[in-house]
Length: 301
Image (cartoon, rainbow, N blue to C red; front, side, top):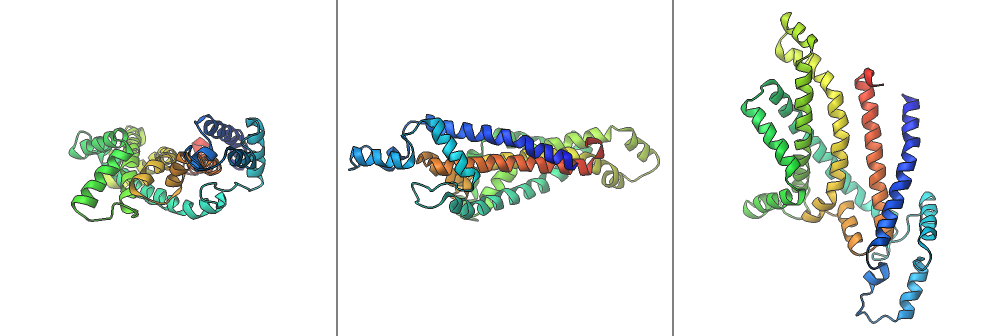
């Protein structure tokens, strides 16, 4: 297991390098640069001052040189300074990351609390009302865009019913992400339990008079759990990506909204750091899922 973890960590290095290169190149392909975003064409800033600022930021150098310099600074722990906010990028990330982490954690817990019992009951009672409800949740979670679902929830519970604030409160973004994530999870839980129900050991346990609930808790659920854990890593990655839109819809001051504003403002240093952090987080989440699955199911080691 230790050697597997080491191999996975070493294998993630090329992934991070490619991701950093893609993000860096994508920002340079966008029209304009940080100087143009900071000082629009109608701003009373001389061409000489603009050129001096570009030179200070290194934007007048070839792109490979810019990338190499940024990568070296990043490896040394220097993520640069936000041009728009005039603050160290590391400080901005440290301030915003806990808020995004809280949303992802709460929405994941809520999604699991919804999907696991619902998917299990749907598998046990095929073609029942619960099974149809699980299918509807799965279809809705996979089909409805996050911004549309979030806007609908904000309209119903924030504007019409006035139960929770529509801006700056974690309830609505957590529920929005949880419903979308539960749509992914419930199908896999149902499928995993159905596969286990068809196994010979389940029929043997039933023939010996083992109670249905006891069979579910002792035999079926533990064997279906590893698959769910693997899918959970995908769900967390999905929520990290969706936080960009969800946080912007609900005015939540996390990394997602920071990334959204930084892309619009061509704040290269912030965009590159947040995107690289997102890739690292997804890599670590998938590694944790692999380790957990190996612990839960020795056959996968």
